[in-house]
Length: 317
Image (cartoon, rainbow, N blue to C red):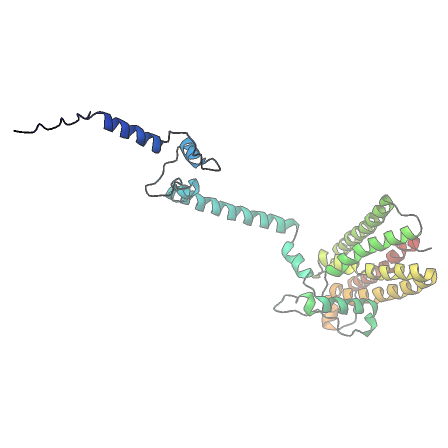
């Protein structure tokens, strides 16, 4: 007698996958595009920016956009652009050379560098020479291969540093003197500076005209004249400062000393410039033309003390 087997339960083969799929859906949520991670503190905008600008990601990178060549690098890699850059550089160099030549025609920049080639020792020795020219013996300007040496190597060489600084200092001292007398005003200070500059310009023009009329062959240039005529401002500064401290008596004493010193300085300096031929030969000047040159030298030297007094006497009371 056989025992009957109990009937096996009939399982529905379609229910288990459905349940497991539903359970898996409940455990692992599927992230939708644009849905933020709940555990993220800040929004990740890198992907949005890359999508917005159309940047593509390189395979294997960390989510950053692939580096692309810059427009400058692409431009430099082009042979035609290299040729254009070379041509532009040559044009710029030619333009710079043309501008430099035109500037040198009107403003001798190269020559001006020579007149400012000074140092502290030269300035001290030059100031001593301006106040005490009687102690100086050798007034010849030294040359090296037909070119005068820089002022810092020769105390007899003219420079523009001392005249320029002396002119500016004179204007400042004039403002100080006017202020101590309760007469200061910007207009009056400007008039003082412009009058001193106008007298200097007239001096230079008058000397150039005189040299042309006398037909002097000299190496004296316009810049040399400005330098020599500008040395008188040093004595003017000393006279006004002493006048502010000790009154008119000190002003006249110091200004008188400076006037005599600048007269001797100009005579001994311009004598070698205007009377170059006679000084080189060592013969006395007897001809009428040479006498005119000597008179011109003395006139230029004598005009310095007069202008020193004219430009400073009203500043001391």
